[in-house]
Length: 240
Image (cartoon, rainbow, N blue to C red):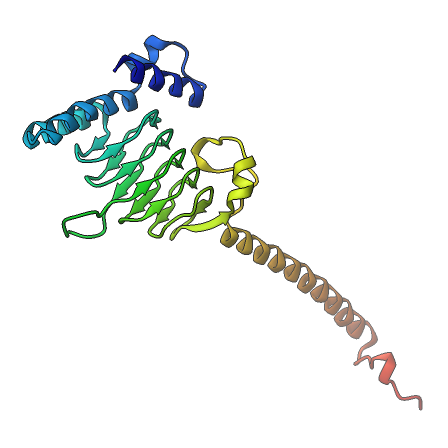
């Protein structure tokens, strides 16, 4: 128990530069409180005392703003940063060293019994507001961008962004990348956003070309007004 607590405190210091002291982590980090209330709730759940497990889970949600079903399986050194609004379903599985930011949902897409929530591998980072839905697998070391909605399997080391989630970076590049807050790297562009940006730039170029043509047309009209009649283009003018 104490070894696990030391590991969890160390993981907070490793992943949150705002952490200043062990006492601060123990007393002021709702993610840590929610995880240890879940450990107790899960003990009751596994010993067939389901109501006590659900009641402790409900109490934990009331105290921390984080809802973890007592049936969920959570690995070691998991860090829930900020945590408000996090929802983790009954059959969800979270691997060691995973990081979840606030507003994350590990939810189901069916009312049927059985496995209906996602499985996250080791070292996964899930950005703020992301939704991972259904009995899908998110591979080790994957990153899910803020507000993404993921409904399909994610390979190890991949980065997923957007609605619906799209893979934007492969595992080889991700292994070389450092940890980034909120699961978004500074050099990662959403391909759809990039395409829209290119279209906007092309539109601006067309507007500039149209403005130049309008200016030339205005000069021609001015010449016509000064000469009192139409001006024939030089390349088709007939010599009389």
